[in-house]
Image (cartoon, rainbow, N blue to C red; front, top):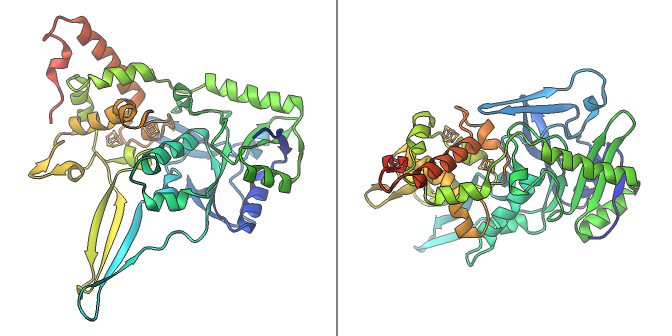
Length: 395
Ligand code: SF4
Ligand code: SF4
């Protein structure tokens, strides 16, 4: 879209919620509940959190209110990402696929689950999460076998992205180019600018629907200082990232990294709790369960999120093919940062940092990737057969 940027006041999120809700969208956005950020359904009149900011570190996440009367106490998007990712709505944690009933004359009547009644509008999507949605689009809709449940939720979804101007300590989206700015793939992009003199949003449309929304919201063309301020804020955020990752180095080190010593070291710390996969916005693995009622006349097939950290997930005939924690962590990290490229042509990580903050023992994939790169370098420098790679990861 080539339309010019528009300046909207600080109540823009509420006006967007009211407008999209009025158009029949099921609007979802951030709320504060029990001290954490959650993504919930919103209706006209609901407000987004104001004056909250988050602090994330390995194994730690805190949501706090800004103290004092400074401009930041009025900030609308002072937080980055909570534990929940948007996949919760596009690729739900649990889904009934169909119900089967024993028919009166024998046989079974099958009742497929109905699709969603209203299209989704996702408000406050961070650029890393926008990229994660594009990653899941390719995985779940980009091949020959389309995931119908995902497609039914994704088609027609209205995406309102909010660019990041203050990255967190666990963020590293700049390493992947998946943030902190957004240049496409959204319907509407908002960038919050706040200081002593001004508070509002530079708004840009990314689709015809976004243009129509901007027209409905009114506003005035953004001034040159405002559009320059937006670009500067995003550039500064890219340089202030809490972490970085050598994407190419990790990809090649992990492709040849099955025998590196780091896997056994991580296995000493990793609890195999699967938190990292459940919070990850790109992880998509599921398992299928069939259940019957007590009469045996009604059965359901359900789908729920699963994880490569569970033993059952890699159970093939006779047992699990990844029996050790070392093998399961190796599979996860190698898939995210290396083999995902072979499968889908890009990384399986967007640098959101959730897996670092929500790992109960603070395992940091940027550190583990750096160790893999260094151990691979050392192994390559040694005579064949004498490198650290010989110690290997237990199965
Ligand atoms: S692997 Fe970690 S940092 Fe990367 S996208 Fe998943 S949760 Fe975010
Ligand atoms: S890396 Fe951390 S979050 Fe992931 S399974 Fe191990 S302990 Fe759990």
